[in-house]
Length: 217
Image (cartoon, rainbow, N blue to C red; front, top):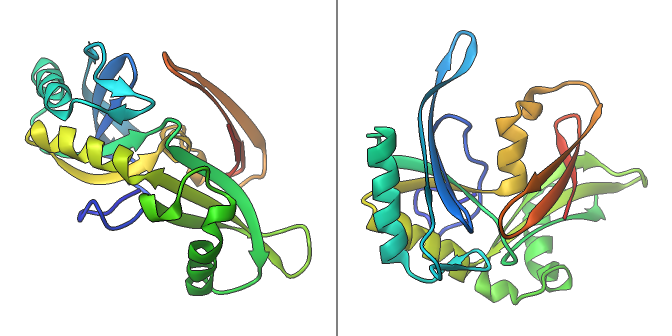
């Protein structure tokens, strides 16, 4: 979701290395390695989140969460310092929209101009990006997945990760992280797949068609 400058913009994270999930009730870390047979699990660990340190996905006490992340890595015997992070919560929006058929650079400008139509918060207070899905059913239009996260959420995660002595290589919104974790991004067919992720604070419903995210709530 975000590149190595962290505050610069959203991007798609790679499904390898160390994944970190800072949830409402637990912090989870997993270390994966690419092998000829696919992804191989090397290490993992899970520890509970201290009460009152996360609210609506925003980390209210980065120092305390950073300390737990350190303990998670020690428990799981994970030594690499670069992590890929999944984010979710009320401060994250993933929405499918349509635009007239246009190049990617023009889509970028159009989304920046019209973002306030689709977001429940001010575009000036958010990191915004997009993914072009492909042609829409209506001729001359394209389907675009709009992705946005409030700066407060992104910055709080960065602060906690850096407090743990780690470097956030990329941040990804949870639906796209799920897409890659299931290997659906490599599918060539157009089969529809659904997933329900029941968490401690929220429940997410995600629908995919082939390798494209079609719906999430």
